[in-house]
Image (tube, rainbow, N blue to C red; front, side):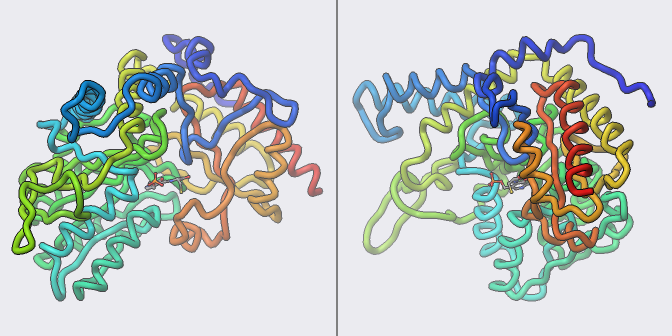
Length: 413
Ligand code: C6P
């Protein structure tokens, strides 16, 4: 067996203690949580921050003159500042709070799309996108008389960059691509792809749902025009997420949803809108979740995120090797540059059966099409089993996964 490196400056046992859920047993076995791409777990610091808000600060924000409202507003806006620093946005106002990545894509597809996309225009997406980064573009394309163009991938699950360059032209109005594929784990060369789109004057939308939890990002360095991610995949509560957009775009875009909190002046003759970020944050937001997202960023700032990423990468390599050594297992997605995700199939065994049997050993993986049916069609499989790692996973857990996969094969034999 080839030697797979471990990361010496990462104390995984210490980090695991920060995540209370990891110490429980499931079906009589210690929980092995390998479904981090669906939702990651939440550290005690984030749980405590949410509880403090509910216990001591709960009230509506941006509206009240009273103590609690001002306190909650300050905490919520402090979370926005943390987001700004975490992704290195130029201004906190460029960071719009959304429910999650899906809402981020829908916001831009609808708002940008209604203003800037017209008859005969083209929107480029890739073959490995999550449905959330396909359907909103498809819908707006249909409404505006535009076309969707698709960047194909090769059999390793890597985008064919020459084909991408050939798709760009004067009709292209947006390129929308994931930073990391949720079904294959491929890390796309997003910085280079953005630079290419910009040569054609085309804005670039990054679906960062699967990158932000796994390695540091910098939206200014990437020069992304839009960049969205979900809190619940990065150690924060559900209902939190961020859409980053360059001010030059956000200022020009119309509101996506309308209602309270996003106006400057309303009369029956005419309504004018507040500047960003309020223009895109109609109604009462998920205040506790937003503050929780800020706490998750505090947590990530308190650990050595570079060492965490290196540990996770070493785990992915080790798991790839362990599973590749098992006869009958096929890895789906073998790109040279990958993060977190190990998708696989076992000859003649449905992924749902794999997932159910692994669950009996306390191992949580995801089985299905992962909301990426075009990827399944490309690899000609109905579904895959997917183990996805976070920095709190261990080599022992990978061993348990490999042993359980071997057992699945034996059960079906
Ligand atoms: N992927 C997975 O198990 P939401 O649901 O809005 O938080 O995120 C949507 C989304 C968008 N893009 C990518 C690349 C994603 O991975 C996801 C969510 C989960 O893979 C649930 S399907």
